[in-house]
Image (cartoon, rainbow, N blue to C red):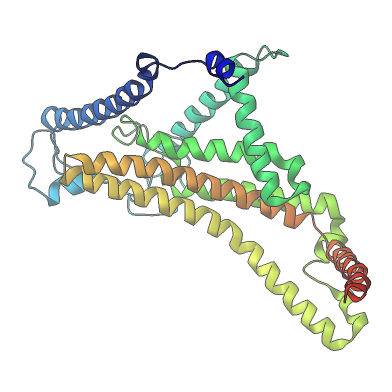
Length: 346
């Protein structure tokens, strides 16, 4: 039997095992070629389009390194592409602005939304039982992100998985589009997440959504009771005062949520743009390429943080105090059931 088993086992020759290392060398060669291409493009752009002083004209002398750095940085205020008023534009050093105009960040965000909606439509326009490549990719992304969100926020978050996925993809590509060469190099295009006005707008949408869901699921009395628990006075004056104090703190924290959502996203994306611009101006080597790879990862993490926090805030908003009170007796009953068994074992 041993001879038969040896005879039936497939024999792998050296020629058949060779493709594995060859494939690895080919993949590493592609990465080296990609890095070399980025460096060559960087050098070509420096020679063909040399930096010039801010406010000057192309061809004006630019001192290294101060002028190189200043010419590659953008002010926080967005550039208005189409103005809707005759009033003068706000100063470039202003962080939060209110100016009726279509800015370069809004225009870029519309482009991102059109690309996402168009891509989703093309991948799902002909749904089949046996999916093709586009439908398979769409289903894989949806199921992976959906399982991830439910695994973090719990089963109650399942109805809000589409909101979580939509926020994640929108913020992700809003961040990533800033790494595409035309974006940030022409006045009409700029990464939406690098504008604090855009991030505040997205945070306010998230803030409004989870509060509306809280009122819808718990009712006006049930939802406001989370912040003004006057029913705690039935347990005593001390319990009522403590409950009301904790509720007021939770109410104040609700208004901090949009600030943290917006400022965290803006600070990381704008800070990454500044770091990338400075390093690209000072060094034309592997450092900018490595920073681009790091920014790709950090931008994805920031998109995940924004969407996960939104999902968690939604689940917290739709959970009333009675849910916590129901969990406590259930856990106590579980401990009581295990107690006799432990006593018998002892």
